[in-house]
Length: 193
Ligand SMILES: [Zn+2]
Image 1 (tube, rainbow, N blue to C red):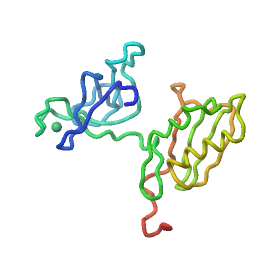
Image 2: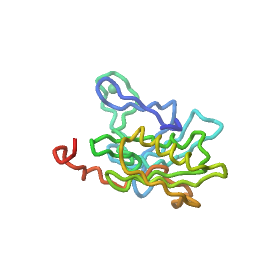
Image 3: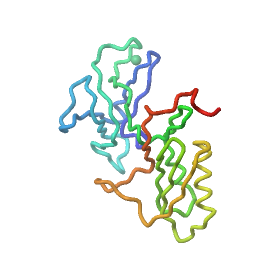
């Protein structure tokens, strides 16, 4: 996790070992009780490294299962977790099959934009909603789109100025939202090359 409330790494046998010294990982079922080992639930880590801004049972929306300690062949005894099912909706998907995550850094730069949100509406259309700061000029919006296009590739980009980005129930908003179902990806032979 970017916030380091949980961390892990894959060993040479392709299994994901948690780093308990970085954070304590709980997996909760839909009723908020601990999910049984082997059952997928919400990952709610509690970070142990950041004393200045402690994140306790930080519900990030990712899903995975804790796995039984069956003795990994690598010899490590660190706890095992299934691969993170993740939120498919925070990665952009491209017609050629790439999933592009962590697009949010494009906003965290020098642009006079107070907040912004990238919404992938279709396989080839991206909407960029943004709230301009006072110093905003048209070229800034173009620069923002150029940064996204650098990472994603050619698509239709719709730049939409707005007063505020709609919040979800927890008062946050998702910076990247993918409304495309990855299962519907056009078959390779149907695509223009
Ligand atoms: Zn291992």
